[in-house]
Image (cartoon, rainbow over all chains, first blue to last red; front, top):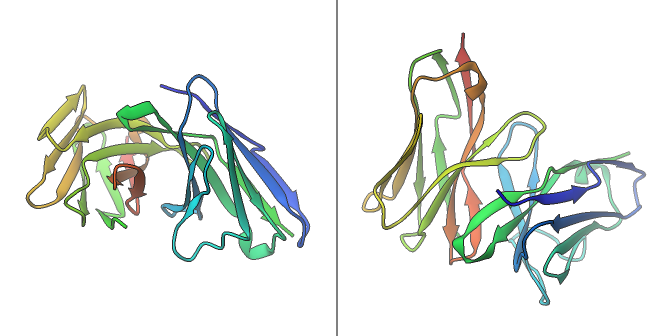
Length: 115
Length: 111
């Protein structure tokens, strides 16, 4: 399968700081990337859909000013959690769609802990 | 958007027995249904998928069936092994581009 790289794998930050998470498709061009949030023992909650060169589409209830998504190239999307607070602590995971055959591959996830 | 429901939330089976996980979806326009396996602390891995023009697909011990009329699809694992223990997620693709996931099933295979 295709390889999606996500960094960092774990980050601990102070409340009020911003954190950037990178998602890269290593061996294919991803016109669409998705960002999910996952709480322990729970499902993947779609946060936003990121299309290269255009604004991300956010799901209802997700604050676009808090979770900034940039998809500047066909292989890179970034999620910036701005002014992070403890309630933002979670496992964030990106995914990328491989071309037109609709298969979705995931990054390894980022565990964010806000103190 | 799409609404995907998944049952059961937990499932325990004896090694060698079969396991079945069911999902329903709400939007009849959804046309692609993948299944993912996620081990603790790791990324979800695609294990099998099915498109809406197919009723059943099999890959060794894993099979998926789709009933478009009833809008439900199921994952079947036969001859379960301890390494099959994980959380399994179904998903439906909505509007050709958005993937919505079920709530997950924690499968435990008892040796």
